[in-house]
Amino acid sequence: MRAVSGPLLFVVREVWHPPTDVYETDEELVVMLDLAAVSQDDLEIAIEDNVLHVRGRRQEPFPSNKISVYRMEIPYGDFEAHIHLPVRIVRDEVQASYENGILAADLAPARRRGLSGDVRPAHREHRSRRKAHR
Image 1 (cartoon, rainbow, N blue to C red):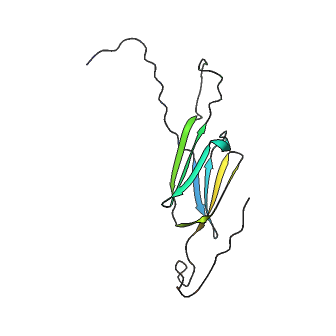
Image 2: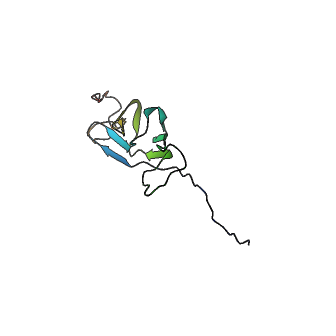
Image 3: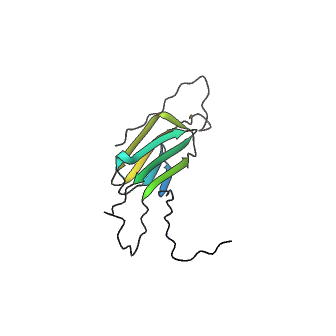
């Protein structure tokens, strides 16, 4: 093992994970992510296998690398969130909005309503109605 002398300087760029809320109302599943100071152009949203994937980047506001940092708690750089949805959703009924740094995705649950509340009899046709938000 070699001994290392002198100052070591290295930068570790980790992907950060935004704070996320997931809740369900009578009509929809809602996923909210706190993405303050992220441009809408820097967001990617996808749904695969009942997992909501959100990726993007928060740009660093600093003019150069030559600054003195006294406190730094806000993460910058690439971020991602992979939210396993607690219920199956209807992919064609996904609505998303981005306002004041909050990304909100309103998702329609695929559950069928019937006597049990979760499964409808196959011979009955039922369409749930959702209000458009935003």
